[in-house]
Image (cartoon, rainbow, N blue to C red; front, side):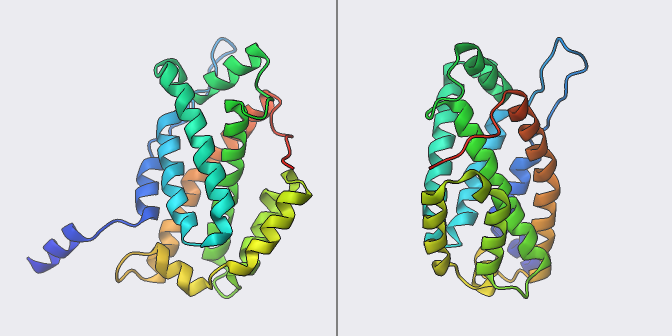
Length: 222
């Protein structure tokens, strides 16, 4: 009886809640040229909001990245609210802004999706590295993942700022304890990370393909 009560009261971690939300993101590919890919926006944004809480555990290093994620989520939510039925598919937003000629503007929703996707790619990569290389320093893992995901799209100002922030990264144990639940083993946390990665990776791949189709995957920041 006590065990059942404990299990009912046991709070889910951000990772576990993120997995549940991500499982709702089902990508539907077109069967012919008369249709477009369907990628549901709402559950994707809910997932991104949950991932912010995971990045928070890394500390001040992720402050700028977190702010960008939050702003990009708000920008996409604002568009979705103008016509929830149509813009429930994020591809419709890209289609609309391409037609208007605004997709490559700095404050466009298309750019918001681009940077949000890149940040999710960084987050997924970092969690994968952490799961496989627990013996490596957290600072090294963050830098390695940054070099392969975000740095190619960052200018020298953003890259320099990120390098300074690396000095504030916590150690592996502190981070793993922070993202895990009460009495949760590292093995369980690894399983959650692997599950999240297996769900997120193919979704990001599809979004990147769509962004490429709309000519949006080459933008850089300052």
